Image (cartoon, rainbow, N blue to C red; front, side, top):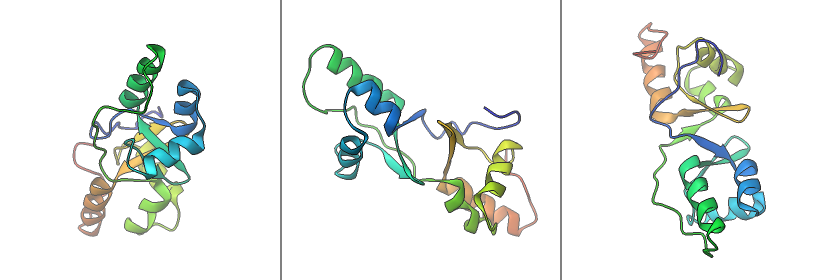
Length: 140
């Protein structure tokens, strides 16, 4: 984590589909298809599909025990956005300005691999605050 960055506890720990596929012995494409069909909780953020760490751990344990199938624990994810999708909401031209807010501790998010994910509701709230002259999300 970058110094000053603030973890958004509203986002559960996540792993990329690439990491999950390696742990589960399947392809990234297969996991992406299961997420798209709603059979696994996950979301596409930017160019990556991310899944809750708890789901991947539960599925890995099932596979270790020889249980077939893809029955994952019920998990709801908040609406997530990448920095590039958050940028126009915050009146920035590029996502790197959003990354800087995260790194400076002014916007909470969660690191996933080399990327950052943000809750859409937090970004929307910060956008409203910025219009009022406040540059930092409360508590950040």
